[in-house]
Amino acid sequence: MSDGLGLSSRVGVFPCPNCQETINTSMQVCSFCSSPIDPAAAAAAAQQFARVNQACSDASYLKIMAGSAFTFYLLRFVPFLNLMGIVVLWFLEAAIPLMAIRWWAKFGDLRIDDPGFARARRTALHVGVGVAVFLFLIAIGVFRVATAAFRF
Ligand SMILES: [Zn+2]
Image (cartoon, rainbow, N blue to C red; front, side):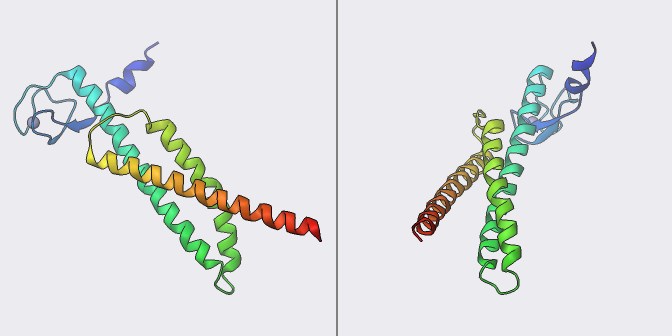
């Protein structure tokens, strides 16, 4: 029953509440401004800092995937490369919505005032909405093709 200890005793980094310099949870005083560090508050801050960093890197990954989806969409019009464009786009059409949903499930409840996180949140929102609209348009298009085929 010593499970909880390993995770909570790990050293984490977080911004000093006083000077905002990045310090770690093993310090009793900030090495930049010498203000005292409360271990419990430091542990909580470090945990949140790690989540925010993860949120930002996940969002930028989402953005890269959305950008590459557009590239592969254009590849569909390039002779010889169009098949690759179609196949990769199929994959991305499934992967991007799943990743956007996962982002909101993991980080949607984070309420912090951080410009980096605000940017990540916007990115996740735009990619999520953008992909939803894109898939909706495809669904309508597919539906039209299906009804057209039905008539013949
Ligand atoms: Zn400090």
